[in-house]
Structures are given as C-alpha cells and as structure tokens.
Length: 143
Image (cartoon, rainbow, N blue to C red; front, side):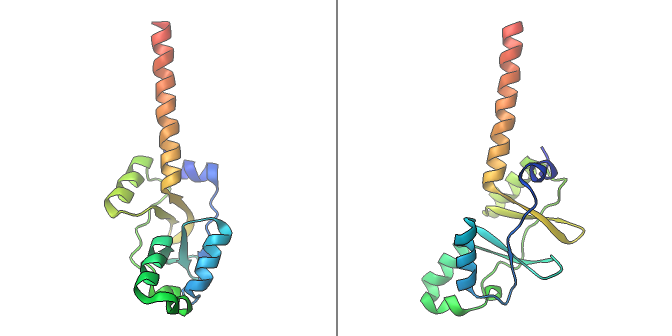
C-alpha cells in the first residue's frame, strides 16, 4: 500500500506551526489537537522542521520552564526526513525504524500535503496482514 492511499483514507490535514511561535503555543496546540507532532512550516507550506512531544520533553528536562517562552525554531528538528505519496508502507516503516522517529511529513513538489504517523503505518500494515490471512483461509477452505 502506498502513502497516497493512506492519505486518501485518512485525509491530508496537517497541523502546522510557524517557526517564530513559542514552545508554550506548540504544547497547547498539541494538546488541543490530541497529536504528537507539529510540522513547522512557512506560509508557503514548505517544511522547515518538525517539533514533537519528545523534543519538548527533552528541552524542558534540560532548560526547565524558561523554555516555554522560546521559539519553536530553536528546538525543532530542522533536518526532517520526508516521503512522497509514492512511498510504500514498508519503505516508511523502514525510514521510521532506522531514524527512530514516529512522524513523517509527506511532500509533493516541495509542498506539504500530509503526514504519516507510526499509528497510520501500523494500522494499514495490520489491515494488509489480515487481508492476506483471509485469502489464505479462503484458499484452504476451498482446497
């Protein structure tokens, strides 16, 4: 299954935040939207970085509450690994596993069009496995 197909089912909505916003604003947005990552993007929807719950916990552990007033850009991951809609689920799983991250922005022609989380990948991989299992059961039943 391709990333395009996953996005067709889940939608391409991505919660973004401008780089000049504060960590406090990022935390509130994460909590409000019940999500684990924000793509840091400009008005042109170009990916500038990503800030995750893990990033925020790390900076708070290091700097304390003073970090809440700092810009997202100071703590985001700027070298973001992205994918395109043509990536397969297995490719995204490998990217996430090797990079040890749980969110991958989807970019087409340099513009953000969606985001894939580890939850999306696992959900769709399990559906594939269940479908394969069903085919095998039907084959065995008719053999």
